[in-house]
Image (cartoon, rainbow, N blue to C red; front, side, top):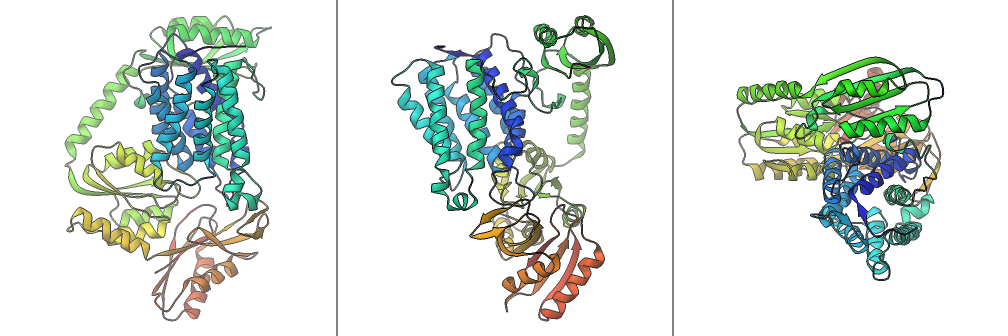
Length: 546
């Protein structure tokens, strides 16, 4: 099979299939995370990012490839989560840049897209590390450029480049000792190859590994119909219904025919079926026709038709009313935290917005962007409070129309210390410096459990081991939560230490936390010891020493 160019329709299909492949393999990619904590989420973050990229691609009609690439890049940027998701969004952004103004993509332009995608991703990371998704993207781009000199067949070029990626992925353990110890390849690199495998499947028509090639367009993960994120509304009526009691003999071909017919009269088409019911969603200007088409398959139920133009008018009215009632202030603070206790602590420190997220859930760039804008402040300080959120926060800072300082807070206790150091009377730069200095004085211990057997930093770790970490590095292994917590403090408390705060999680009672704090107080008589409800899931304790 030979193909000289990729048009917009095929590229949309490639993106959709790549998303499907990743969704189907999300857990396998998650399992490659080296750190055996219960929040290894590379596959999940990349999957959510890719789902956001394909969500609003519209119909598969004759659309320039530049438009499809641009829409995917915008969607990915809004929905990017975690470092892996942000890097993926930057790769798609690079693709869009390379395809700007193009109706189609030939082999040389494909090689250029690989190249610009990798370069854009590298620029987004302050300290790029080799042996990661960045390496996989870069080596594939270099080889694609070389392959393109000898072929003008985009399928052949993509196949050769995909094999190049598979080879460099196998070598990632040689570049990162931590991967070699754990006996795994880089999870982000694997996720990227899974997506590209989906691209290649769409190009060749060989959908091995998908549950159903015929149902490809419907297998794009969880569907989220976000009317507020839509641009100009072309199709006014959001139409949803279920085909129940399907007629005898209904086939996948019938369902696919309904999907294609709906795409001719609208966009945001979503049709899924388990052959007992068919769930349908479409934005259209002719909802009656959308219903009539489905009657050919069976009876209709749960019919819902919303006028999105009227919804938009109401949303705009509320926005204007909100803006009119708010005055732009000088400073605002956004903090990321997960847990009832931590949210309450930040609110008590006059933090304007607390975004749900942390060890077990990374907020998207769009979540952070909305929180920053909601402060109505000229200058905003963002406290990511997790190493896997800092990059997303930095990207959010670039796309808002105000001055934003992203502090390098790697834990919630660091963020709390930074918030305490904030002064409304200081200038912006002084505040940033003082808050950063305060955060960096805090060392954070965390106590959780291992989710699998592995080797990390030459330590044999078994599933369900209690793990104690200091500043995100595994320091203590044991079988008892309290003993691990006390052992951690032996490595943290020094003569200069003055305050120890125990933040207990959702799975720890106040009485248990108080008992631990009492033992700490008896052992470290020179320190003030406090307990606070953090309410964080999966982590028994976060303990700060300053």
